[in-house]
Structures are given as structure tokens and as C-alpha cells.
Amino acid sequence: MIRYRPFHNTDPPKLTELWNFARLGPGAAVEFSNDALDMLVLSEPYFDRRGLIVACEGTEVVGFAHAGFGANAAGTGQSKQAGVICAALVRVDYRRQGIGRELVHRAEAYLREAGATEIYAGESGTRNPFYLGLYGGAEGAGFLETDPNAAPFFTALGYAPAERHLIYRRDITAKKDPFDPRCVTIKRTMKFGVMDAPPSANWWWMTRHGRFESLTFALLPTDGSPPPALVTCWGMELHAMTRGQRTVGLTDVFVAEPFRKKGFAKLLMSEVIRRLREDTVTHVEVTIRDDNTPAIHLFRSLSFVQQDVGVVYRLEGGGKSRIEDRR
Image (tube, rainbow, N blue to C red; front, side, top):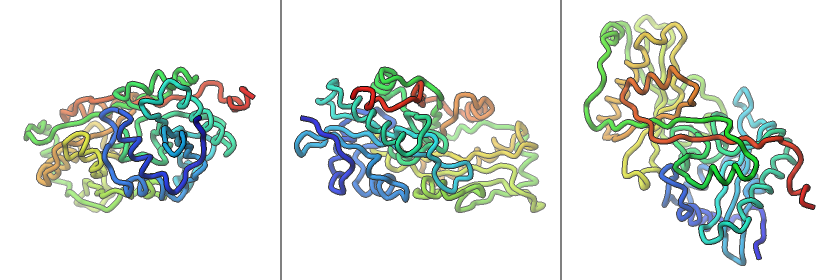
């Protein structure tokens, strides 16, 4: 008989084992330690054991769903308006028995009790409380299309696609960097600088990307004016076992309005790629929302190739708890 309960402190080894054998596709890190799960999930200051719901048969953990909340507009804390189903998985030999459905229904009930008026499945943007570095790409991208069970599962539960995120990657081992003649002129007025974090980093950023080794690269005008372009790079080391590659994620890409479409972003990215290559990085990756046409054009021009698509689902008709509906 399957029973459902909140997270216990003795669960991490069973959860990591379940994750490793859940066949989540190439976008999931595997064979990571319990310490990694603790750092990226359990030790977050807003972790609530009630939101991590575990399905058990006897002493065996056969599935779990994890629900949480993203950041408020200022990035200084959480917003309880929109809840997120961050992860949901069931052991392969226990699937098609209604366990996943029950886990998600209980996760939805937890979110509603905490104040959620809308519920999403899949982390993205600032609705990304837990699994950065363990699933997805350089940023939260929802559930990936290479995770074949996600779409039919959430669709059957009444969720509909709400966002699409494109994952682009580039092999930088070959020195075939595109040339833009505008960069020659820009270089005369710019220096290349390095910071510990982007100027926009807030509490939420520090709880997520701040847990990884990262550097922010910037173009710095020689006249001392603010940097026109910045990008942050962080090491996606937990994905190395899955991919067999040393990958760096790109995030917080920023180009000031007056400097867009003038070659500044291309110059910055070309210099970043050159330096990463010297540091024996083999691949760089970026996550782009599919309606961000300028960013897509930029990275395509830099020889990035689309590798995957992530979909964020939204529960249609918010409404009351479906657990109550069945009583």
C-alpha cells in the first residue's frame, strides 16, 4: 500500500537514488552526491519539508513531488502568489498506478494552502526555487522535451503550455569564432573586466546562482562610464557525468539600450568564449525564452546550436483543490 508523507531527514540517499534511475533525459544531472542535493535543495533558506511530498511502499521511496515558490518582484524574498511544481517523478516499476497524479495533487494542495492563486509546472525565470544545476540548462527552462514523460503527464493533469525556453549550446574546442568588423572599432574604447557577481545580483540571485562558482564579465569603457554589456558564467559541473563535457552556463546577459545591435554583445561573448577555451572549457550553454528574438539571433550568429526545448505548464482554471473534489 502506498502512503504519502512530507520529507524526512533520512530521505536524501533514497531521493538521489530515485533521481538517478528515473530516466529524466539528458537535461538531468546524474550520480551527484547527497551533499549536492543538500546544497541546492534542502539547505535553501525557504525550504519547507511539507512541500517535498514522498510516496513510500514500506521502507521504499518510490516517488516524490516538490512544490515551492519563486521570488518577489524585488528579489528580496518569496512571492506566494504563483506556486511551482519543481519536480515530480516516480520509480519506473511503479508508474501507471496513479502515484504521480496523487503526488502532484498533494503538491497543488500545499501550494494553495500557502496562498497560491496560480500554479505552474516547471521552473523558469525567477520561479526557480530549487533545481538549478540539477535539471534543465543555464537557467530554469521548465520540463524539457527530451524528458519524454513530462508533456503527456502534465497535460493529462489539466496543465497547458504557458512558456517555451530554447537551450542553445556551442562546442568551443574548435577556434572558429565569427568575425564582426565592428568589434575592431569598439575595442579601442573598451577594456575587459571581471566581477564576482552582476551588479543586479539580489538576495534571490545569491540563493540560486550564488551557490556556484561564477564570474561576471563586462565591457568597461575607458572613460569610466557604466559598462554597456555584461554576462555571467557559472560552472555546470554536476552535468559533466551525463554529458561527458565541461560546460559553462551563461546567464544575466545584459546590453544597455543605446548599445544594442551595434556589436557590443558579440565582442563581449567572443572574448568570454576565448577565455573559457583557454581554461579548458569545452562547451558553453544559454537558455533563451522563445519570444526573445534579439537574443536568439545573437547566439545563432555566434554559432550556438539549439539542443533542447523546455516547456513551462500552467494549471488551467486554478480553482479549488482536486483532492477536495474527490472527497
